[in-house]
Length: 557
Image: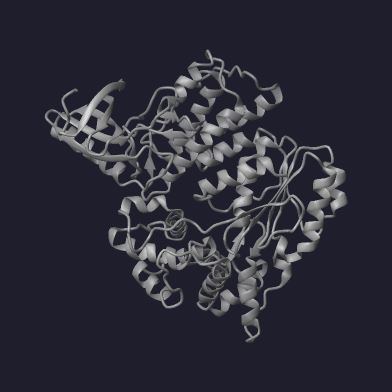
C-alpha cells in the first residue's frame, strides 16, 4: 500500500497531468470511497494565496449533480491538495477520439452539451457569477449512465469588474478572445466545444468546417448558430449556455409548439426518468395530482426532452380542438400530443384522447389532470411534491441543495433578489418553510417571491401559523390542495389596489404593476401574452365578491 497522504488518502494511479498540476485517483480510507486529488506545488506566498482563493470559490459552490464537487483542500509538505468526488467515466475528448476524427452525430452533441450548459448556467447564477474558464471536451466526463459532468476548475474565478491587464485564459482553440473571462466567455468555449465534437477539431480562424453526417441545409443552419456563439463580441453571443444549446437543438428541426419556459426547470430528475419510461410503453399517460404540483411544467419538460423520439413533432393541443381535426392531421404520423388541464372538461378531453389513440397508431398522448381521464388502457402517474429536507434531522448546509424544494425556492428567490443567499443560520427555517408548504412548487414559488423583501426567519414566522408542520408525514392530495390554496390566499392578501387592478386586466396595466405581480408569482408571461394561474383566478373571484377585483377570462391564453 502506498504511503497515505494526510493519514487518510491512498494514491492509486495518475489520471491526468498538465501545467503545474497532477490529478490522482485515491482511496479515502476514512469514508471508504474513491476521490480525485488535484496536486500542485505549494509555490510562493503569492501563489499560495491564489490556490486558496480558487478553493474558496469551489468549496462555496451550490451543489449540482452535473458538477464535480470539491470536498476539502489542504497543504502537506511542499504540495497543495484539492479533494474532489471521483467521477467514473470517460472524457468527451476520448469519445471524440473514438470516431477517428469524424465528429459525433448532432443529436448526441446536443444531448451532452445540454447537460454541460445546465451546469454552466448554474455557475453563472451565483452572485457574483462563477466563470469556469476552461470548457472543452477534455473537461467533460461522460458517466456510464450517460451523464455529462463538468470538471477541472483550475482557472475558474468569480466575475469581477474588468481588469484590462489580465491576459485571456483557457485552452487555445476553446478560449474566448476577451480578458478577463466572463460568463459570455464560457458560452464561447461551449460553442467551440460543440464545433469540435461535430467536426473532429476546434474552430480555427479562416477555416470553414467540414461537417460529417449532416445534410447541407442543416449544416448551414448549425454553422449559423455556432457562428453566433463564437462571435468575438461577447454581446452578440447567446445570453446563456442553455440558449446556445437551444439554438443547436432547434436545428434538429423537430416541429413543435411547446411553450418556452420563463424560468429554468429545476430538479425532478427521478420523476422525469419515471415518466419517460412509462411513456415509452404506454400510448396514453396522464399526470395526476393536486393543483400547483407542477404537472404542466413537468409534461412540457418531458416533451422537450423527448423531441428526438417523435420525428413528426410534439404539440400542445389547444382547448376546443376537435378530435377529427387531430386524426386527419396525425393519422400516419409519429407525434406526441400534450393535453393540459383536462379536469376542466374531463369528458371532452377523455373522448378526444380515446379517439386519437384508436385512429392514430403512432401517436402518444401525455395528459395532465387532477384526476385520471378514465379511458381504456390509460396509464397514470401521480406527480409527487418536491423532495424536502427533514427539519427534525437537518442535513448539513452544503447538502440542502440536493433537495428539489430547496433548489426551487433558492433559484426563484434569486430571480427576484439577485443577492439572495442561504446562510447556516437560515437552514432550519428554510427546511421548515419547504415542509410546511408540502414541497408544492406553486406554493414555494409564491413564498420565494417574498424572500427579497424579508428574512427567512420573518418569512417562516408569517407562514408557520397558517401551515402546520408534520413529523415525517406527507399530506394526501386533498390537504395538499388546501395548502396551495392557502398559499395563494396568503399572497393575494398582500396586494395593493394598483396590483389588484393589474391582476384584473394585465394587458392594460402599467409595466410596474405587472412586474410586481410577476415577482410575486401571481402573473405569468412569455413576453407577449399574460396569464393567471387558475387558483389565483379563483382567489381573485373570491375577492371580487367583496367588491375588489375581477379577473376576466380574456387574459387567460
